[in-house]
Length: 139
Image (cartoon, rainbow, N blue to C red):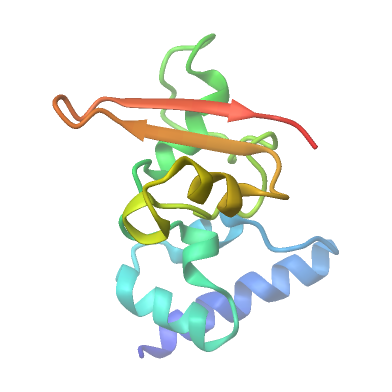
């Protein structure tokens, strides 16, 4: 693992502690810079940060840009400098259910999402690869 990747994680933690705030997905993405994704994920995991939790799963349907722009899609045109992940999506963003992993039945989905809020449900249309996303805020 390159020392530069370790330094990025150490700097990220130091900045977070100085601010007195918890580390967010935005902090982890910002610290990544141009680092190799696999190497950076390895360093995050090595230091106890679940890479999938902060960077999203490798096989996720949405990109980070999707998540960062979600709040503004309906009101503003695409901007070059994306804002942080919307607070209504929550920090950190993590996948809690995937049909091919957790089961294809409706009850499998309900069991996996029990106790999580807010929820971002994403469906992909097999024929066209279009995405449908729904945010559910609730207890």
